[in-house]
Amino acid sequence: MEVKKMAYNIPDSYKNQTPAPRLDKATLNKMAWRSIFLQASFNYERMQAAGWLYGILPGLEKIHTDKDDLAASMSHNLEFFNTHPFLVTFVMGIVLSLEQNKADIQTIRAVRVAAMGPLGGIGDALFWFTLVPIVAGISSNFALQGSIAGPLLFLAVFNIAQFAIRYWLMHWSYNLGTDAIGIFTANAKEFTRAASILGVFVVGALTSLYGGTKLGIQIANGEKPIVIQTILDGVLPKLIPLGITLGLYYLLARKKWTPLRCIVLLLVAGIGFAFLGHILGVKFWG
Image (cartoon, rainbow, N blue to C red):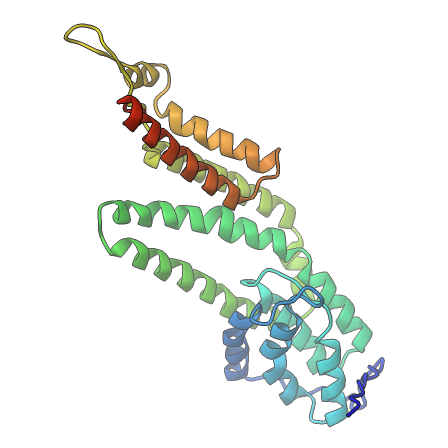
């Protein structure tokens, strides 16, 4: 049996040009919740397009009562899409505002692409460079003490923050429409740089606070052996953790290593030095 592919021809505008009623809060909240599945059907042809359409579909079904208009809207919303998964509701609100006012399809397409672009850097700076290091630094202290509160605190704070931002951005951007793009991206460069600098400070503090790698090598000297780690602490405390951190940064930034390769390197080095120390009877690490 021959299967034929039918391509839907997307028009330039919708048949029904009458603006639809505003979406209610329940529908907006439902789409904010569905946004967590943005990358559930991720692929390298259209990236997050399937998850994007799944998230925005309840709003489109209420806006477009004409079946042809709904089909056209679903078709162009299934085109290539890629943005930060925690900030996607910002784009959703803007696109839904345009769909509700029955803007030209080409305009909606252009705005969708323009809105999704800057969110990658902003989201990375906000979450991966700021929120995660700070929360992980606080919660890991509990975990190191053997408390179950460590991972629970991390998961609670991180998820409360990202869900709060999802719901707030959905309502805020939908109410503002395309004006939200200018407001949100006006100081995007400065915000990203400030958040990145804060993240660097946090990572540096975590290295100093939790970097526990020490040299265990001692040189015989009568009753008082010379402890190499004591000498290093006199030069610069936490010198070994700092050296390891800078070495990993060099591999990541200059040699383009992946984090997985760095983890494997540390694992192999740790096992190798432990085995060598066992054979030679030397304690390399304290």
